[in-house]
Length: 114
Length: 112
Image (cartoon, rainbow over all chains, first blue to last red; front, top):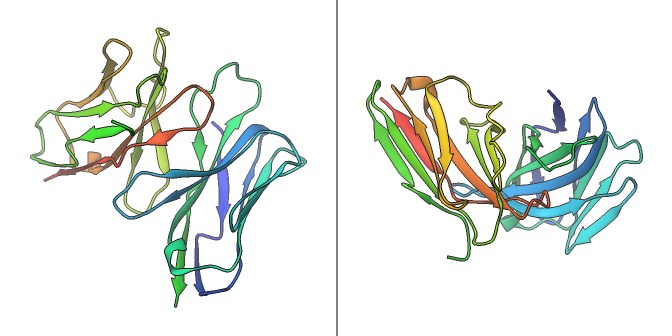
């Protein structure tokens, strides 16, 4: 099956810094999604991307669907303590007729020091 | 309710016992998913229901795992003869088949 390589695995940053994380795939995806998971909770959708090259923002978050359709990145600007959590990329492979099952990356653990 | 509801939130069981985990999806969502998350790991797909179609069971790790969805709404994930390696958080999600999944808070399963 498809696999997503998400990096970095973890990040330790100071409040106010910008953050960047990315996911790459060996196969083409037609949808990329970014989720955040707080401790003890399920993942919450942050941004959804549906077209190659698409750049979408949600507040301080910006994500892009790579033009090769095999990668995506998420940027967080001016980080704050509540950005702490695990960020997951997820993708749906091209060629399917239904949304079936998402493939998730292994997650990026973000720690923000005040 | 407004979101996906899972119960119980925590379950401790003895090795060899059967467990049932419940998921109430968001009303009107036709798709329902079960994922498993082990400590410090990503999400592992288990099973997917879409409307009245046959479920995609390709992610179930063994025949001890099964799931059903009654009336196109509530779903139950059953694990028979639990093993210690089954310990994990079991997450349910639902969607309108748009690819945007809404997750519940999960059931933390501990097999002693």
